[in-house]
Length: 428
Image 1 (cartoon, rainbow, N blue to C red):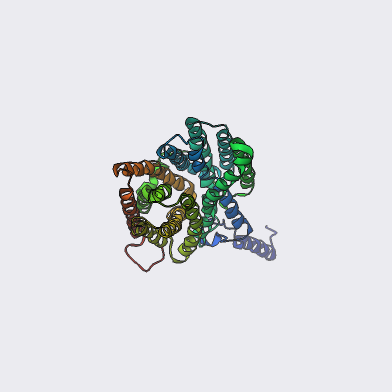
Image 2: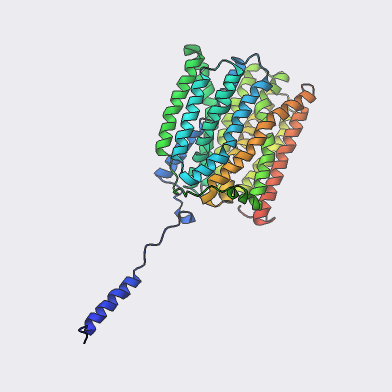
């Protein structure tokens, strides 16, 4: 006969019942909108350090044109910048996939080594082929490993403020475009070109090591076996395809005003002292253009803002750059184009995050940037060919640029419609 009393049975049942009622701790979904911090020390530290990482982009091309490569045409020298941009963007097809699987740290270490090594080799480079190898290939491989983790990590900390945060991050390239040429001008006279480059390399090394120690993704990596199918899966989705086509078209014209505004101004009789300042003016305006539109985009929609800024870019090229001949006009155009083009650059990562699974954001970002490497590579030669066809004139270049920028804006309307149809008053 069992000696189990009713009281004991009741206690046992109570224990079992209470065990059943105590819920196990539910796993927190890090991709749930409620889990994005939208701020805090860790989040803004990632933004600040990611900005420092993007300082690495865009150095020294103007100096080469005036010194080691002064016997080369501007078209030949422009291939260094085009190749640098191509390698930086094309590397995304590998870097993005590695980021999703392993996180940012080892990629940042690899990128730091290649970028600093490229700068050190540039300090020893005295001819065209050496500069191509150091600044056109080695350094941008490193930059690719810095830029993509910097932007992708930032997206994991913000959802509502994502475009604003990314806008702050990508201002680094504009700030670098202002700071490093000034450093060159002051240091090269005192210590020579070689040591100037080494000083820049050591400065970058210190900043990048700090980045390695502090930049973290909020979402842990998810290692996956390599599959080629993961690369073509995004092309089955209309929003990704149309967004990529729109970005591709816009990229064909994006850098043409930046690369040719100085030469065009000189040909129209603008004083060299003013022409030399047009790019710093454009870069300074681009700093505002990368932050302010991001803030607006978070309030009124990222696609909405991108469409407006792309169409605005095309309009000011045709309405200002095309007819302008005065000093005031060219300054106004440089500032306005810096503002609008800066918005385009800063909003691309935010758009991708809008239409992507966060677990695949690294791969999709890398794939997008790899595709954009193609127009980045050919846009300058196209611009040079248009000027040559126009016997040194800029009319064909300016018309082409304006039309292609407008076409990119129209294609973004198509990308937006694939998400919400043709509803106008809607945040997207």
